[in-house]
Length: 180
Image 1 (tube, one colour):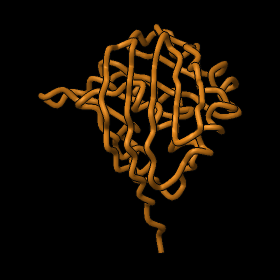
Image 2: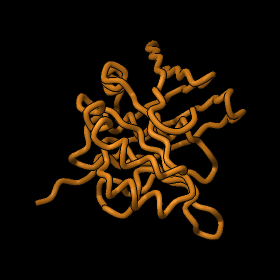
Image 3: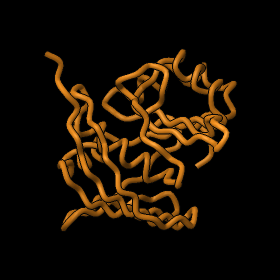
Image 4: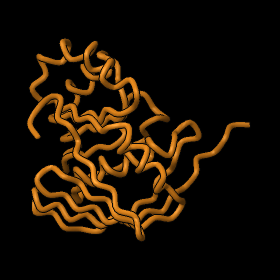
């Protein structure tokens, strides 16, 4: 019998001084059985960094032709496609052809190797940004994961502060491609 997704309830308060965006999002996140706490929390951080009233968590791991997070226009075009992890060159190419803007949040122990192998094939995509989250940062985020979370995310000058209860984590995503 197939395992079912685990449901997480997240209250995400975003204060993004860089974009002048201040909002609280109440998210119901279905964690795929193969998804780790690390990936779940990277998904939450990616959502916060791109928070918008029309931003949605997509099916992600459970389907090949959808991103992890996306924002569609009112007429149905994909304005923003967000992928997590280390997507193949084919997936990057397809997503860049489907969306006005694509952001990849690369993370994991092999991220640098993946980027060294992949970056040459991405030079033609002006609508692609690749950001890297360090292993220490994503592991610290994973330690915060719980089925019910209240997270405060403050973003200023590219620095991200994540606060939950008495724990505060600071991260700075590295820009590997595109503008910060």
